[in-house]
Image (cartoon, rainbow, N blue to C red; front, side, top):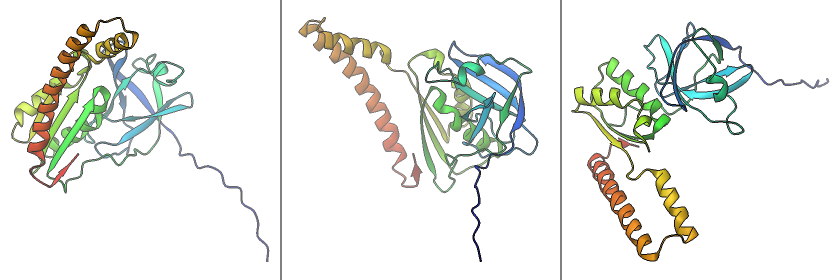
Length: 239
């Protein structure tokens, strides 16, 4: 009796191919892109797909609901050295192709056993929630409440605000939308903090600025606290 050593190779699934059908440049560093959905490709709302260009792959959450004919992706540009694939995505035009793994993955999906759901996101983080809400409305589901807190530093970053406004208006009985725009923008806060550290502001000026910042964020805190308190009056909730 003898044992033979078996070389185990890492299993790599056969990659599929998707074609770019449309793109919208929201800002210089935000892009919505639509690609064809391969035959028999399936996913759950909230999951992500893995696409690639020339062997370089990254995962992106899917904006589309499963019933839609194409895969919609919302991507933020991350320049090198931190970002390697997104600069290549920015070069794509209609008709170009990308690779896509045959299976979507992810456990960040809708859990119907919870009656109330609190969605919190900034900029591209809203993507899985869009998929979940589109799918929920498409199937005319009922019995759940959704609270979506969507934050951004600038108005141009509220990419799906119009769509969310529309669905929350048409379904106000169970979808509550709270857009949150910091006042002042976060970048300004960091700038002021830098001035604090460099001691370029007089003590009185620092106190006045801190008071204004604290006042704005205290208003925001009270607003969010009220929403969460209302939501968690029912124990069957999920964040």
